[in-house]
Structure formats: C-alpha cells, structure tokens
Image (tube, rainbow, N blue to C red; front, side, top):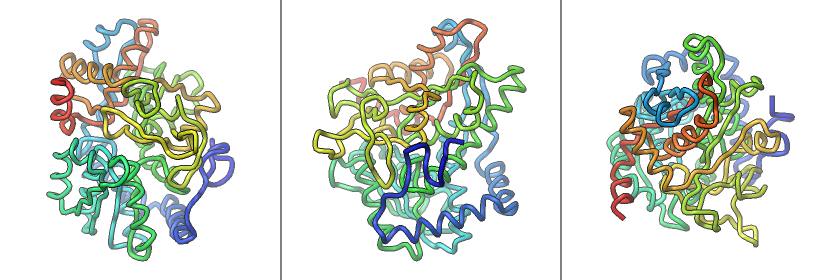
Length: 393
C-alpha cells in the first residue's frame, strides 16, 4: 500500500481545510470505513453497477489502431460503454449510496467536461436526492450538451464566472457551498483530489475498472498486460485502472497529461511534468504555480484535463517511479480523436484522446508480442462540437 498513514500517500495527501470542514470530513471518513466493511453496502453497490451502470464493461482488441501503430497489440477497456458514457458513474453511484446512509438529502458536485456532473445528476435522479452542480462558464460553453443533460436529469447547474471560469473555479465554489451546508449536504468530488478521505474513496470506487481489466486480461490473453495507459487530469480513471496493477512490477503503468499549446506557463495542464509540490483544494500534491506560489493558469483542448493539480496518489507514484507520466499536446490529441474514430469506430472523449496518442506512440516502442491496455475513459459525443470548432480554426 502507498498510504503510510491514514490520508497520506508517502508525503502527499493530507487534509488542509478550514476548521468548518474538519468535522464533515471526519464524519465522511467514519461513514466510508463502516460502509466499505459492510456487506450490505457492497451488495447494493455491486447490484447498481451491474444492473444500472452496465458493468462489467467490455475489453476490446483494437486491430486497426494496432496495425497503424506497429508493435504491440492495443486493447481498449471500454468505460465509454458505461451508463452516461464515462467512468464517472462508478464513483457517483457509490457516493450517493453512501450519502443516503449518512442521512444527507442534498448533493453538490463540481464538473469540468460535464461528465462528472451528468453522472452525479444521474445517480441523484436514480436515488431521489436533490442535486446542484458547479461548472465554470467557459467549460459550460464548451460542453453545452452536458449542461442540458444535467438540467434534463433534474440538477441545478451554477455557471461560475470567477477566475479562469474552468474546473478550478468550479471546485472553489463547490467547497464554499459545502462549508455553509455540511449538515444536509454531501459533496461528491469527481476525482482523486481534495482532502482526505476523498482521494481514497474515489480511487476505491473507481478500482472496479482495474479489477475487471485484470480478470479480462487473464481470461483473454492468458497473462497480465505489458502496459496500461490512461489519461490524467485529477486522475480518477487512471487511479482506478492502475491501482489493481500497482503490485505487478512487470506491468508498466503510463499516465498521460495535457500538454496543451506547449511548455510555456499557462499553455498546458501538466502538473506532474512541470509543477512542484503545493497545496490545492485541501491536499498536498503537484501543482502548477507561479513564482509567488499562486495557482497558475492552465490550458487544454479538453475541459476535463484543464486543472492545475493532480491527485496525491499520482504524486506519490511519480516520486517512487511506479508510474511513468507522459505529455500529449492539443494537436496530437485532436489527431488521435479522429484516428480512433476512423480506425475503430469508437469516438473517444478528448481526455481519452490524449491516452490514445500516447498508446500509439508506446505501442510502436514495444515488441509485436506485447499487449497494451488503453483505458477508454469516456465517449466523445460531448466533444464533437468543440472539435469541429477547433479543426476549423
């Protein structure tokens, strides 16, 4: 295990929050520890994942993409086929069931690309809880389809006009709301970020991806894969597929950050590549900061990767060398978005497209008898209009 003490991944993680939230986080930690040991909670969650989310998701060979890359065979772990079109639903159903156990009647969430917001609104509709979602105004413009989907599902969407009007600002507003409403409200964080116990809860709920994938590899390939690749913003889909493989030293794990327009400050969203340790949204991890220690501006063509920090467990995996992290820029991601669509009939999310680009590059480096798993974290319906705009400019 990477957690040396509760809430810590090596030196990263922790709980850096106003006193108002300490009691709420302690309550959440106790509730999670009890639920995770309770066969009744596990049974309800497993039934929901099977009957509502549609798990297990498929494990699909990508023959034409593999041929294009040369080298290793690429396999897709198809989280795009989960209900709502992305991995986010794994976390939200688990946390909504937990919130009901805690007696919470109201759910709030932050969202960037909108998939976490849609998944939260979906879970709240399924279980009958009030839902409010905070979303940066720029992200709401880029992801107008998902804004409509959230409202259709009964959620109230608050568009945030402060700061860069993206995910960081939406998270700030969600945390402010939670500080004033902890009695009746549960905050569903959408990634493996934030104060303890959120990084652990989200990773555990998303580890269903890697647990399934491990079984599918053994059944289909007769062995574990040589490499597993996933995109990293906050890092939940990557943590979910990586965690069950961490103890397997022969399996390479590769996370892919958003290189944006280039290495200049403000031109990318790659804190593991270009950031340094700092505190953001309640935990110590790698953060993009300016010379005065203020959170830096970020950029990515993908709203879901447009975040200046990363989950603390990823920071630990980077420092220990267990996970390799690469950077893919906007241009390569847009090319990969089109490539997977044309070669395999799978339109990926722009977040996933970063991992597609890195997978093609890595497959070419591996021998022909190697197997590489690409976590297809979400489908690209939400991104089609934005990609049309970007390809026209």
